Image (cartoon, rainbow, N blue to C red; front, side, top):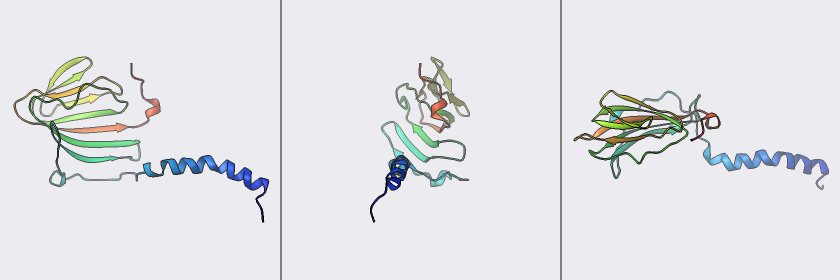
Amino acid sequence: MGMTRRDVVVGLLAMPGALNAVAHGDDHQPVMGPTVFNWNDMKPEKTATGEVRHLCKSPTATVDQLEMHVTTLNPGMESHPPHRHVNEELIIIREGDCETLSSGNWVKCGPGSVVFNASNSLHGFRNVGTTPAVYHVINWSPNKSMAPKAS
């Protein structure tokens, strides 16, 4: 039995969806549900500027990607040069004396301070103290197509 014109049309109509599924098959991650991250279970990884404890980088029920980590930044170091990205983030300082680049100004912040970096805002972070700074980063991407464009 040969292929009919109908078989060809149905196959061609189904092809974009099938190719999309194949192209994005490796990107699919399960939606993260309730989770507890115990400090004693977080494994520090050495970096050039201190260390980092990676907690998660996955979709949730309401955001495309939630990424969380805890950074220890050595005295006199900056996390990276000032930059921009679409995603928004919170930085919660646990220990140390830091400065953050916010709205074009370097602002001092210490333990208990919370920094919000808006979508595509130029921001940076550095340890201006004499002891390691420890801070939690919560970073999310709810809808990249709706985010403000970099200016």
